[in-house]
Length: 263
Image 1: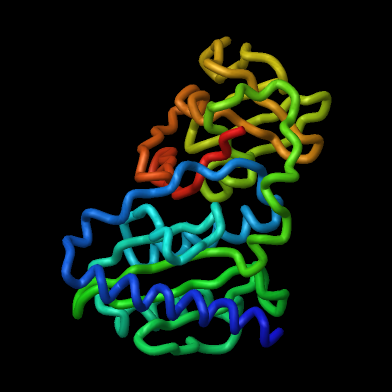
Image 2: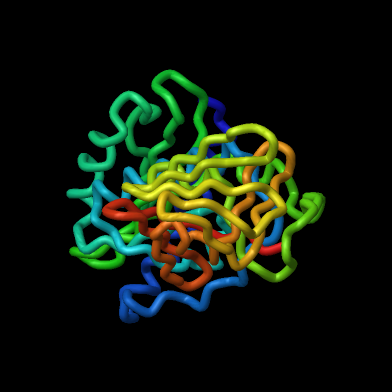
């Protein structure tokens, strides 16, 4: 494990401890005002790591998604959860859920605990989970990538066909709730629960199992990833709920918290 990765995580842990100390005098249901959605596209690997990990952690702790405190200076892909359980009871739940993908055990700084996580057992560190107590029975849970600053957003090119100012998600952002399959020729099939949607990059017309539909915005691509408009997720039977600067996307019984991409 590289020392600088753990050092960065523990530095964030110190900031989180200060945030949670302040939160003890305020209602946990009223988080700090969130920042505007970050612009640019994170790498597919970073998105998969954080999105998939946040789903697993959320299921383990039963947390509610919140806007991440700005003081933590997390990446745009970070997910923060409010859990109504003591930190001590969450540590074995999260560690047990991640099993062999957890890199060692929890590292402690003050009252904050950090667990480094890989995407696959024995793989390199891809993300981390932080736990910090808000009170004896409340915990702030943070999931973020360890290399979130590798690709500066200011240098990201804007894919052709996207509408500026509108929120989009990468197909990989939806891992765990929507299965995205590339069919070739700019076509993709999105499957969620019992619903299927076939789309074409640059076209608003799409096909569901029930017939043709018109999407509010056309999907786009950066050459590798499907860049899908958030507003078009409803055509797949999914619901989108704003949560500060984040979104909760629910498709059937599965849901994921994510940050939209705004160009």
